[in-house]
Length: 334
Length: 265
Ligand SMILES: Cc1cc2nc3c(=O)[nH]c(=O)nc-3n(C[C@H](O)[C@H](O)[C@H](O)COP(=O)(O)OP(=O)(O)OC[C@H]3O[C@@H](n4cnc5c(N)ncnc54)[C@H](O)[C@@H]3O)c2cc1C
Image 1 (tube, each protein chain N blue to C red):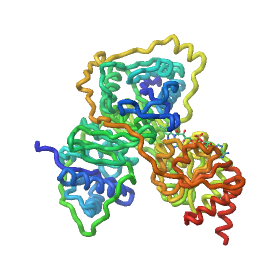
Image 2: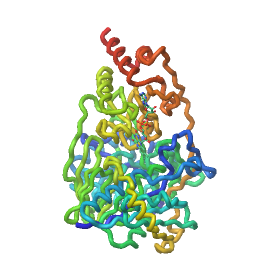
Image 3: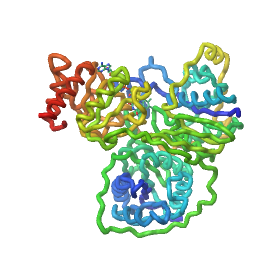
Image 4: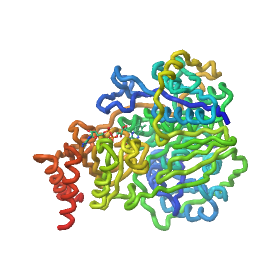
């Protein structure tokens, strides 16, 4: 077999088409391909109804070639089917590097795919590049809950990396750009026992979604109980934002888990984040690295959150926040 | 139906150590705490122990804990025994290279095959040191069993495991035939505290100790696929502006004024 060549991105589907991470993969992948002096290609695994739309969408991201696996079993995200298809696509495409998103789908898909092919994967990368000396993929990834970062080398071929969402610039679409299509005939007959989805329940928060909110008001253990979250909701409503929480507040049962922000909760990209009674543990900060302005209200002037904040108030939330809320309301009525 | 459960557990530095007390070790390959801060069992692995013990309480069976590592502190790593687990297997080999996720999964897979009888493997969703969330998924691949991640509830009935898993805005229920592997998240609920009786029982038990050779593995097949070149603390340049005032209420008002000036509200 010829030497592995180029960078392959795994296209992720959303309910409505192509998931936003795909443009970020294309952005990071294009730079890497350039450093290697090789091509950028993409893998689309889908049913025949959706694949033409996906192929067009990824073509507009400037990839040279799209490997397309079409199969009825690839209609939804049945992970075993997608693993089997991608394994076959990668064997045919023979890339030097494979990039996926560390999304809800990708965080399970990436490691399993890499292991299945006997390869290494750098998980949750915030930077990637080519180590010319070692001739390997290198990546930077947060470790220890975000308290530090590790530079790692993926020494296998192909080398896999799962990229943290919103950590890489998406490439803009080029209208009319198309990619060469290579169909891959995949066989999904030999899939072993699988885990089946039998039910899905949604716990929708009223109002603005946390991930989309421009302003987020967030509470932690310092609030002391569930009651104070009422004030936080009132404040969020006045500011047109959403309410979040630290894991400590969720673990205590004061608010449900979908409120949790951080490493193992949600990542947000708000313009304004008001952290109330939150100490600023690195695992919490991991979820707000994309926030533009952090405001910390904490009675302990030494709290770690002040190291990350743009504005800080040292004080008791039960006095600071109601006064702040009243001021916000008065400003709004003027 | 009694269930034979394997739980994987990792000894890690205490993740609640304040960032200011953490530093990069002399080799630049990992973080270390001050010597007086003892290590802990990875929190999500304790959640996995709890999930296993709940199944055992409800329907009987056996819980075997396996840990791969170096420099085990016995008082720490024996905690699952004092919580009620039946057996502890420690795999440490001074001659072994530093394992990456792939090698760790290879060692665990070999150990699980050596244990032989099992229905279910439960793992913490990720380890709080390298936060990779790779070993459980890789282990499922090497064992060739179905895998469900980030569970908040696990039930076993009629040769099937039913898992309620955490989704971004709610929950999903998944079903898989046994044998299977499930990763557990903190949403499952607080792990139990060891009872006095449990601590006494654990003090009488000795962990089984295996080396790579006991598993038919040699160091060369465990060479890392992902190498850690360097661990570092990134530089920060944010400067906080403190909002003053004669009392806390006034600070609240001043904050509103400041944010309005900055056009943030
Ligand atoms: C693997 C792993 C993953 C994790 N993932 C997450 C995650 O996704 N999200 C997350 O948030 N955490 C996560 N954590 C937990 C994290 O380490 C911290 O334990 C948690 O963030 C602490 O929450 P907190 O700041 O609310 O509580 P604390 O650290 O207890 O802080 C409470 C703060 O409130 C202040 N306070 C108290 N009273 C008042 C008052 N009256 N007025 C004003 N301030 C007051 C205190 O000064 C203190 O700073 C994770 C941990 C691990 C090990």
